[in-house]
Length: 93
Length: 255
Image (cartoon, rainbow over all chains, first blue to last red):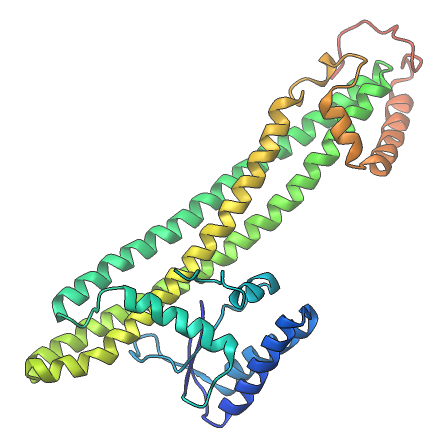
């Protein structure tokens, strides 16, 4: 599957990582909801590592849509919280 | 990935898709689509240039502060050699505040630098994709009927579009950040303008608003240390330093 890290680019990640990524993602969201900033950053780092170490960066001229798009690496806890309370990185209109 | 329901990623993906839907479908007409992409690429270049401009502004501000620090230090010495410990203290307090600002400016400049790098890298990626799209569109035009071309080009167009939405997001974040920095720099400039950063020796006995503000900033300990050090230097070096508290020295400030 193709995963994009916003602001960085696309990676070809083995399909079997999808489940692990999904779990981390859900736990990261729970951490955000619980106000657990440290926990969120830990999980977030694990997600990025999974993608960048297991995945291969796609060539710049590859024209494919991503299956998964992750927020930017430097997302702050406040921004992450904003994602789930309406005003996110890209505001709803 | 239908099985992937993680919300962190689905939320952002949904939003990027929304940005994509809002834009005109670049696959609609091959040449028009390409033209549109090239235009957007220009906007991205402008976004990068804006970040560079902001960075330069901060660097200039930083130079100004550095000069201010030197000036306040000199003024503190002058005040001390004239026995005006109160003025020396005020000057050092200001110096401490400016030094704090300098540090935060440096951090901000570094932040903008890394943003600039990231945006430049992003722009390069986008340029490659737009170029790949151009090549692909020519191949498609030559080999397929209009209906087939539509299908062929759709994914390619989405590939470019997603990259554009991503770069757009990066630029928006960079702009938000520089906006915050600008607001902060403006606040400090106001403090500077309202006070007497220009000539500390014009300050009378009474405290002005700035003095009170500065005192509240708790620069105390550092200022005490520096003042003691400076007193030792001024006292030891000059030999003819006037007694503290006695406003005897009416001569002009020595440099």
